[in-house]
Amino acid sequence: MDQGEPQVEDSMFQSGQEASESVETARPEYISEQHWNADTSEVRVEALAKSFSDTKSALDAKREESGVPESADAYVTWAEDGNAVLPEGLDSLPPIAQDDPLLSSVLKAAHESGVSKVQMDGVLDAFFRGQNDAFAPYTFNPDEVYAGISEDRQQAEGIVSAVNVYLGGLGLDESGMQAASEAMSTSGGIKLLHAMTSATGVTPMAPAAPQIPTVSQQDLETRWNELRSKDLRVGTPDYDEFEKLGNSIFKGKGQN
Image (cartoon, rainbow, N blue to C red; front, side, top):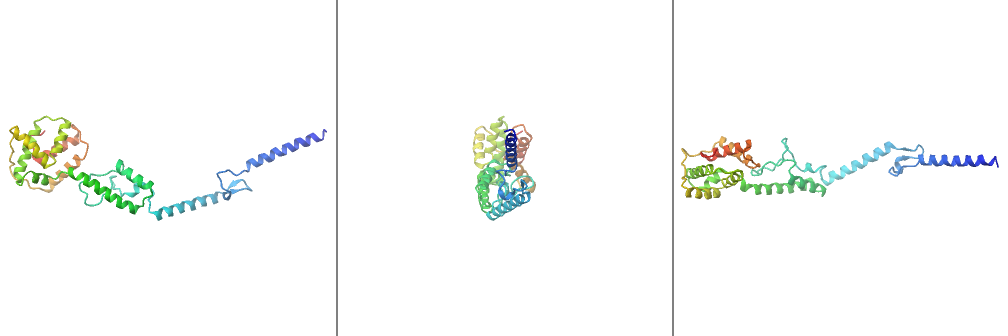
């Protein structure tokens, strides 16, 4: 009996050791058999790396074949200032930044749906042109505005001056100035305001000489349009510049 007991203990010890070795050499579930060396209980690193490289190459080739770019932003060409490069001829559309919410949502949806770059080019062209058409009515063109007021340019300028005098004396607050600015951007709005000025006895002011558009005048109008597209606030430098440019363009003499 005494000789048998150590044998039982040795047997139990050996079984435990074998079990321990079995645990130590077990292949992790997340490692495939082809990437596991059972003899050394080690991962076949080179085989795993090659498999990963082959998989990535296959996915890249598939993406190139499909025409879907790596990221949503890659659908658009971006200028150095961070704004989208727009198709030619879209003069009414203000700059569109890379973080523009509407454009970003469109690009993200297209990328998630697997839309190719070629397909998206057509979609974006229609998107940008549609946005341009939406902004067109709000783009200020002095020549068109004056022509809509009167065929006589001098008479039209006198009417605009009279309206400016009238508005300048009203002491409008921020919301009132915003409404007046919107009205003054169209010939119809100016005609309406002129009817009001006439009722108060304010008469058109004849300019000293006809206005002749020049390059510098066009630059003023371009800057005025740029400022007008912003969310202007009374008392800010942008608003002050906007108001001064408006006075210069319209030849107003009564606004501060």
